[in-house]
Length: 355
Ligand SMILES: Cc1ncc(COP(=O)(O)O)c(C=O)c1O
Image (cartoon, rainbow, N blue to C red):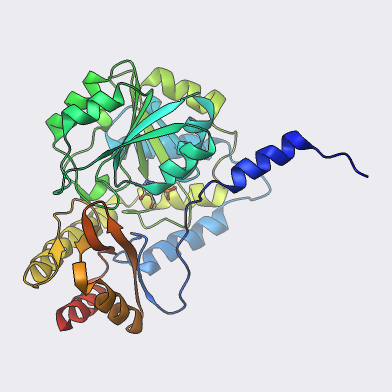
C-alpha cells in the first residue's frame, strides 16, 4: 500500500476547512450591479484602447519598460513621486503578497468590511480581531485602537465596502499616527469617488500602505491592474523583492496606460457617478420601509428590513443583480447596489418604489 503523506494531508484538510471569497455568479443578460464595476464608462472607449493596445504590443516579449511607464502615469494621477508607487495584478494580488510575506500574525479590522481580506488572513493563519462599526457606520476610535494595539496589521477600507462611507480624514490620521509601530493598510479601492485620499500622507510615513485600483473608477476590472502607494523605502523592496517579475500582462499594461492617458474621460464619468449617487440617494430616501446610508463610493448600502425578500425577488425577476448581504450585525436585510448608468439606476429605483 502507498505510504500516506500525513504532512500534506493535514495541510490540505486544514485549508479545505477555510472559508473562501464567494465570487458573484454570472447571470447572462442581467443588469449587473453586484460588483461595483463601472458601467457608466462607455464600453467603446475601453474597447478602442484595447484594440489599439492589441496591435501595438508584442506578446512574444516579457513586459519590461511598460511597467515603468505605468508607474509614472499612476504616480502622476495619485499626485505622488514615481518612487512611491508599485503596481500589481489587481489590488487583490498586492494584498495577497503583503499577507504572505510580511509575517503578520494578528490583524485588526472593523466590521463589516471587505471579506476577501479576512479570507486571505485565515489562509495565512493570521488571527483577525473584529471591532464592530457603530449602528450609523462610524467608528468607536478608542475601542478600535485598543484592539489594534494587540495586532501587527490594521486594515481600514476607505471608503468601506460594503457600507460605502469614508471615516473623517482627521480621525484617520489620528488612527494612523497612534499605530506608528504597526502596519496600517488602507484600502482605497473606491477613493476616486470620495472626497480625500491618504496617498500623500502615506508616503511620508513608515507605517502606511495605501491600496488603489483601476478596477472601479477606471472601468478595468477585467484587466486586473491595482497599485500601492507607500514610502520610497518600502516601495523599492516591494518592487524588487516581494512582487513577482512580471505581474501584469503586456496587454493589460498597454490598456491601463491608454486609459490613464485620457484621465479627463475617467474624471467625467466619476462626476456623473457622483451626481447619480446623489439622485439615487434622494429617490431612495423618500421610500418608507427601507433605510439608506450616505455613500462616498460608487454603490449604496440599503437596509431593507422586512422588505428584503420582496425587493430581492422583484429585482431578480427584472433581471437586476445586486449584492445580497442578508443580516449584518444589527442591520436587517441588507443589500449593496452599484451606481450604474442613469437608465440602470432608474430600473432598480422603479422596482424598489413599486414595493
Ligand atoms: C475594498 C476592495 N478592495 C479591493 C478590491 C479588489 O480590487 P482589484 O480588482 O484591484 O483586485 C475590491 C473589489 O471589489 C474591493 O471592494
